[in-house]
Length: 61
Image (cartoon, rainbow, N blue to C red; front, side, top):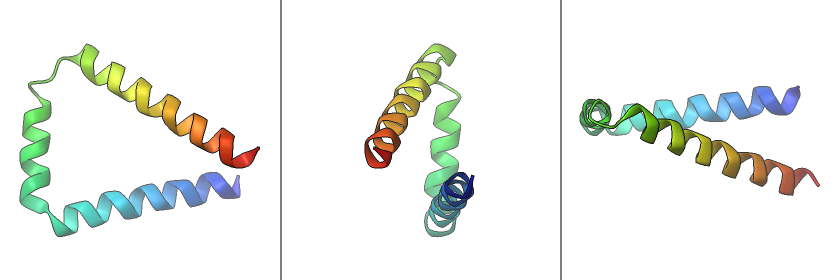
């Protein structure tokens, strides 16, 4: 459970630092995301989730 809280904190830190350093770029990126199809976003999300799971599994074993 402790690792999950640390991972969530790291996620928030990275997300926050991106918005703090590049606010205009982040706004334009979010506007461009509206043009991407839901199926493409879903596929990309699943790919990143699997990659993240593999990294975590590799480090923990």
